[in-house]
Length: 257
Image (cartoon, rainbow, N blue to C red; front, side, top):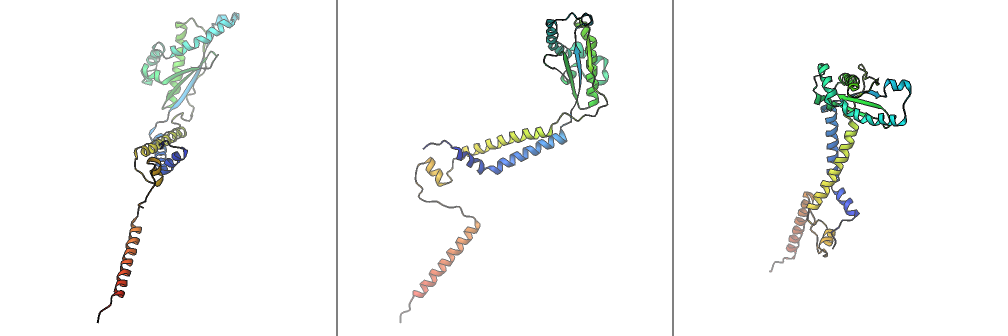
């Protein structure tokens, strides 16, 4: 006989341990929600935008061609890396000691991205304090603007917008609905996996179908499982039967004269 499971067997296994799966999912979602709300510190995000353009003399004479523009766009990837190097962050740490951050700390907080085919960079900083994140973003942008002309012969670096110090944005993390959704999916997969693992480890035969499936033999008899009520009922019936038999035996006894 084949021991492969069909679709009905999968549903049977899941239905058999559905409460265990539900308990795992509920516990995981509750734990994720409690951790996100009460233990995870909210993180705030501040950003600035920087544009690195052609030199001022070129902009005035309008002597730019498509190759020059493409070259400027490709250089954006270089500028993105330079912002996170000690050449920039060392000066930020030196000139802004009130942040209390080292170059390594600043490098972890600062993220730089750019929109495709543009010369605009977005500098993003995350911190548990929005005001501090905004101050760091503005400081890094300003230092970059002042230092990049010395590293590259660039004269036209502009900060398009600074981070607003007094703004009151909502935290960007933790994302409670997303965390709960992830916990739900992971816990559901874990619960189903445990259910199938327990079924695989359980090698007992529990029904006539199991005997037919695994042994290929007919079932001669079944011993049912009895609870306490059934045992009491059976005992009462047995006692009544024995009393009836005794009474019948007494009726059939005759006394010889």
